[in-house]
Amino acid sequence: MAQRDSESGTPKRLAMLPYGRQWLDEEDKAAVMKVLNSDFLTQGPTIAAFERGVADAVGARYAVAFSNGTAALHAACFAAGIGPGDEVITSPITFLASSNCVLYMGGKPVFADIKPDTYNIDPDRIEVAITSRTRAIIPVDFTGQPAEMDRIMDIARKHGLVVIEDAAHSLGASYGGRMVGSIADMTMFSFHPVKHITSGEGGMIVTDNESYYRKLQLFRNHGMTRDHDEMEQNEGPWYYEMQALGFNYRMTDLQAALGLTQLGKLDKFVGLRRDIARTYTEAFSDIPGVIVPFQHPKANSSWHLYVLRFELNLIGKSRQEIFNDLRSANIGVNVHYIPIYRQPYYRSLGYSDIGTSQAERYYETAISLPLFPQMSGSDLMDVLNAVKRSVEL
Ligand SMILES: *Cc1c(COP(=O)(O)O)cnc(C)c1O
Image 1 (spheres, protein in one colour):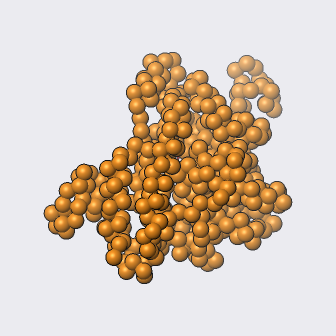
Image 2 (cartoon, helix red, strand yellow):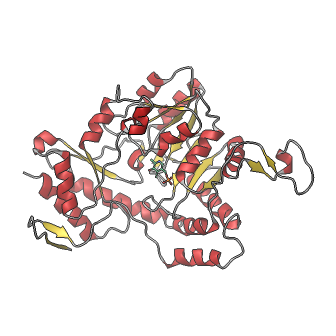
Image 3 (cartoon, protein in one colour):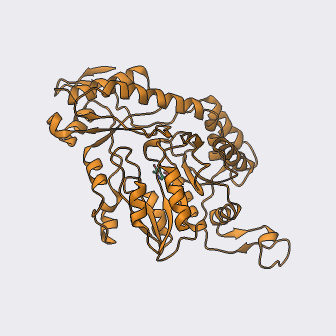
């Protein structure tokens, strides 16, 4: 629904269209109510049911749920044995959590540049960044398009590195016909409300590796075990043992119940996201100065984000002008992401933008459009019209 903005006279939606939004129905709400009326608000049976559901959906043997995706990444770095002095290679074009998890363990994130077409980490730049201290790679499936996982796994095997795939954007995606979650050593999913399915806050690591699985469980619960087979000693049936410095990173049963009913809608949600992305690409492909997202032939994205890039000199506007045009039309655009090394905290650690020119070029010209499964046809038209109005001569 468009009205005229009283000051500029340009058409404007009545309400801001967010860039992402959850979609909850009565089934979801009833599932949470059922847990509220049960004996277990946390540490109950719904956690394992949600873990089994996600593991089966993505083709993994084990899954461990966490309070959020950031906690899950932290745990994965613990399970991978990242410690002081260890280097972990990741992309600079991602959310802060992808590299903060390395800092939590005392390790050093190393940023390898992205590819100019997919905006995902460039395997050639990973190889160049490997040193004798490199222990792991954290590829990020940016926007929902999987990173080049076949090449990344080959590089990791060659150098004995652990691969932790940040799949916060790519639940339901596949690469080379394999589901994301069945490729890397460990794969992280997030269930924040803007992601594909939500549990309020929530995250998960899936893996086929039993040793990682045990360590993830330990880390989630204070580094503590009650499994007598796992213990160094046994002082009796009451005995519990702390074997590492873990955290309380548990998910509640309330969250797991919501996640589980949401999981049943994943195929529908991903299908709708793909439909919207296709409509965007069809609408924007022929506009001079507008660059639509390139898709690697092996990747089948689940489309968390839809990023447009602009040839600003051709359009004759700055990125900020286009951004402001869209925001003033109540289109909730965003920029994903500011290269991590630009953040003051990272600068204080000595990071700068040397050698990541593709990330810089990407960042200066990118805008993410609203994309979520419940977007209506008229929401979509509002975005198409607002973008065209801003960039067409
Ligand atoms: C959302 C997100 C995370 C962290 O997930 P939370 O559940 O919000 O902690 C990590 N990496 C990326 C790329 C994300 O988008």
